[in-house]
Image 1: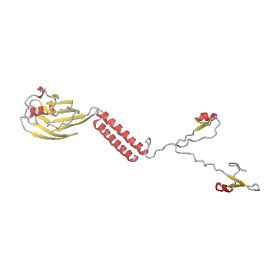
Image 2: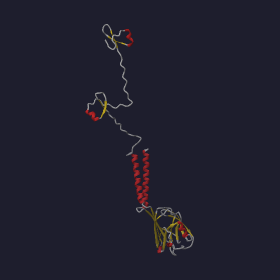
Image 3: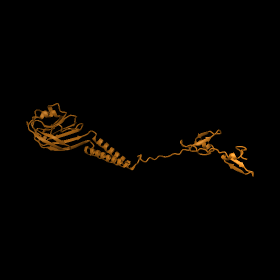
Length: 289
């Protein structure tokens, strides 16, 4: 039983340690994982993610969008309802699925070549940025359905667009390190359990039996008194007596028997049974003659 428990702890510890090490390797010391730049082939005015593509919460998301020839570009994150209403009549490329680190599924949607208005004039963006040749945002994803939008500004388009994405968990590297140390500790405990070090085996209890010696002093009146070992050393020890068990009882003493003696003419004494007394004259009971 102890061996199986030890192996189970060791396996669990190794798995925890491997998971912690993987988290540390993926996120790195800055607790972030970056991928890109990745080329997105489109000449539309907008690239947006559909609802539920970004389904994480409390994750730090960094997005960098770059276009050639210093064309103006805009990057924004907002509620999916607002983004959908804003681009619903615009020709665009929609990202319908995204798997980390970078595996996207897209579809083209026909519409007007230009946006209905400048994206920089809108106030419902959670985070946004605009620039010539590139723009980037860095934000923590909220607990709501959001969409990412990369938009051209003015009459330009997004041909030659490259996107770099970074995401991570706050304190992720430290959490991975803690998981690694925890796993190593659990694995070491499993080794100790298998070896039996520091673990009490309840199946084979070892109890030390201590034999107690009782010293008894008998005074002049015949009364017994229990004394300590130091007090016994000061006296003349007659005998060391072990305290009898409560169930023990002294052996019964035989009852005293009466002896009858017959003296013949030659003065020789003969023992006589009680059933033979009728044949003789009792001279003195209890005394031999």
